[in-house]
Length: 321
Image 1 (cartoon, helix red, strand yellow):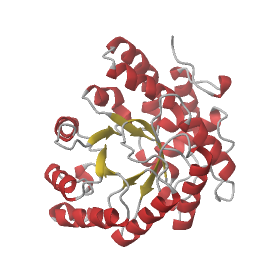
Image 2: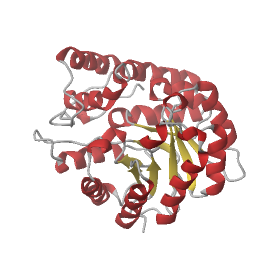
Image 3: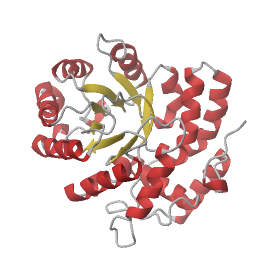
Image 4: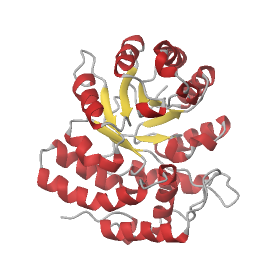
């Protein structure tokens, strides 16, 4: 049973990182501490595990189960846990979904199967079958991860509407369409359906612009470092306080520029290095094919933290008054 029954994915949702030992095994104690640092920030509505940020691509089924179980044991009575469903095959995706439900997750974040990149957009029935298999395994609410169309893994606007009708447990999309016009269309349409589907932006490199379009939440790996700032920005935008939102965004900007610079795949690698610099992680180990960042880039991350006013003081962030 989910710890938070009838959870509705909205608000500020950090995607947490995975701490590793020098031999690349899971450092459970550090992972749990990191989870607390993110989950217990005032204003956070849920946390995500087994997502891109926690290197799910490099974790076995057993490791994913261990990560979810440890996360639930650590903060599962305080905040809803969203578990990533990352698999190229629908049968394996359904197996992970069933495991997540048994463990006590409150929601699922379903990644598009990489196998769909070779023309899957021309066969929308394949996407519907994938999600149906997952929904048949559990009645947990589902967040559909929407990728950019150019990479072949994004779902067309019409396919998303068909998905929502065919799989009513889809309650939100994590929108990484990376197309401002399409993103705004998603927000205006999906959040105003007879059965609304929340748009959670993950456009963390242009977060303020995205939120001002009306997204009803955000799901972001950068929340592993700056959940406080994301909560403050979300609240300011919701309150219509443009001056405060711009001031907060001025602090987020240097970090967005550092985290999301090319190559994009190093974004969570950079976040680990930021947490190491802040004293919130003891190591910044990643699993191949990711590799340790060069010292010059780590120095740039340190400079971005300074520019953002994010310091080691008290182990947290200092927000402007």
